[in-house]
Image (cartoon, one colour):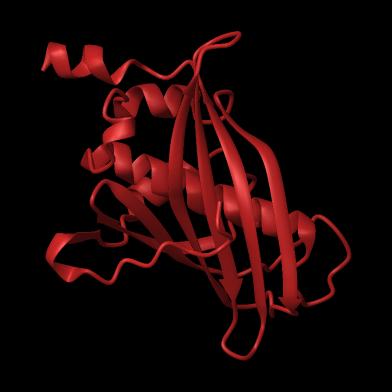
Length: 188
């Protein structure tokens, strides 16, 4: 990965899904109420790649409150936004590598089948956790069948506030036992 967010500026080949409250509620269901940090989100796609953008508010933490985004919350915020991004991409059928998934399959496996394999984060300057923004981009996909079918997804992310706060990251995700997109296309 390059360490930068995929920019979607080509409006001719771009589509956007506006904030979907029902989808967001389903994405946040596995998290306890005080940890529903993602308050709204949208997804933009271009040429089969997608970027999710959202707003976050951390009102209750799992650690001591510093008023700034910390490592634990970075991971939770990333997970909530990437789960929304993947769910929206499956629902809208906008990312070819996710075409084999049905939304019902995704909801059934949202918690047990989505794993953070590697997370690298860099806190450039403190991010005010009371209100900030985030962006996650699906950068590339790799299929693996070494032990079991896995779809590896390289992603980039960033978080920023209304001032100068900034944190960036690169995350490798694994989706376990993904449906075969070829069989889904054949069934359609």
